[in-house]
Structure formats: C-alpha cells, structure tokens
Length: 315
Image 1 (cartoon, rainbow, N blue to C red):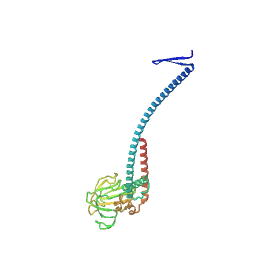
Image 2 (cartoon, helix red, strand yellow; image 1 turned 90 degrees about the horizontal axis):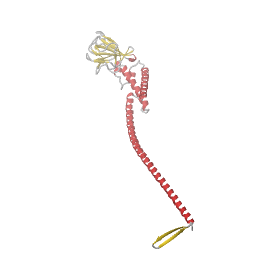
Image 3 (tube, rainbow, N blue to C red; image 1 turned 135 degrees about the vertical axis):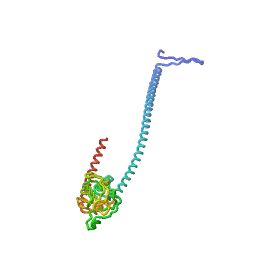
Image 4 (cartoon, rainbow, N blue to C red; image 1 turned 90 degrees about the vertical axis):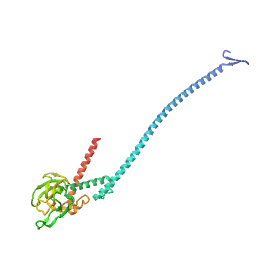
C-alpha cells in the first residue's frame, strides 16, 4: 500500500476515494512530460512562425519600396523615351529638310547625286559650291557698273573719234561722269595712271590665276597702287578723260596679258557657271578647276580636323 496514492473527493453526496498505483503514476508522469514537451514544441513553433511572419513583413515592405522605386524609374524612362522619340522625329524632319535643300543646291549646281549617302552628297556639294565661290570671287564676274547700257562691244569697229577701223579690245558702258565702279573680283591694284590722252585716267587690277581687269576714261580714283581689294569694293568713278567722244567706261578683261571678250565674264554667275568654259576659249579651265578643287578639299579637310581637335579638347 505504500506504493499507492489515495485521492479523496468529498461532496454532498458523500466521499469518494481514488487510488493510484505506481504504474498509474508513471503513466501520468509520462503523459505530463509529453504534454510539457508538446507545449514547448508548440511554443517554439509559434515563436518561429511569429519571427518568420515579421521577417516576411520586412521583406514585403522592402519589395514594396523597390516596386515604388521601379515604378518611378519606369515613369522616368517612359518620359525619356517619349522625349527621345520626339527629338528623333524632329531630327528626322530636319534631316529631310536638309536633304531637300541639298537636292535644290545639287540641282542649282547641276549635280545628279540624289541617290548617294547624305554625307557624301554634302561633301560633294560643299566642294562644288566652294569651287564656284572661289572662282566667282577671284576671277572677274559680273559688271563693274550697275544697270549700265553697253554702247560698244568687243571686236572690230570704227573708232567714234578717229573714224579708223580698229580692234576694240574691251566693252564700253554708257554711263555718266561720276558713276561708281566696283571691283568684279578680289585682287590687288597693279597700276594707276592719270592721263588726258588715249585711255585717260587708267586703272588695272591684278586678279588670281593670271587674270586682270582694266578701266579707262575715269574721273577719280578711290584706291591706290598696291591696295588689296575685295569683289564689290568701290575702286573709282567713271569720267570722260582721254580720247573719247563722251562719258563712258571702257572695261577690259585679260588673261596673261591676252585680251578676252568681257561679255562672257559679265554674264557669269552661279546660275550660268558652266557657260564660261564654253564661251571663253584658250584657257585650260579643266586644269584650273582641278587645282582649285584640290585646294578646297585640303582646306575643308583641315577645317574638319581642327573642328575635331576642338571637340576633343572641350571634352
């Protein structure tokens, strides 16, 4: 009986006694231990789940922040994409405008290169236009007086004063005394000769490539010998000096001293650029154009290299 435990429970109905032996006690302890271990395991699982839930919440917040950041970045990139597309569209429109205007320039220059690459077409058009500008500014082109009537052309004629048949080596413009005379090309004043005989007050300009132009019967000089002048500069005023029947300008164009008919040079401009090659014989125009083209290409190449160097140093 020592190994038994008796539990008495009293109530209004009486007292009841419960007796637990050694085996029952071991069973009860075992069950209690298992329950305790179960409680500990449950507590551990609950603790782990709570920590995992907190960690998941932190991860969720982190993902939400990243999502918000990515959304803002996507919005920014979308705006940038729209801006780049607009810029690209504007650039394409400008490129098309450049291509169209380049086509107009090519037509003006008499070029047929509309199917080539834009860069190649630009290079060719630039060289061609530069050649024309160089020639039209350094070789006499256009009239030296404005809106003047031609009174006598180049060739044989009867001199209006002497009445003798003589070769007229220039072109006469019927202008009043004091009419401004402008340089038809860049150059240097080679000669100034005041006189009351023959050609009267005389001026000669030395231009590039062996060309020269001269002006006779002047009333007044504006420049001096040795002056460098540009196309369009005022050089003198017309008059009635020397052997003449009235006020006019006698204008001559020469190549290495040989007189040329001034009319093709008077009519020479960008729109009629090629006419000079057909109308003025005895000049190796092809060789001259090749030399100018070589020089222009060299200058353009140097300009491109200089621009590239400036771009590199500015970075």
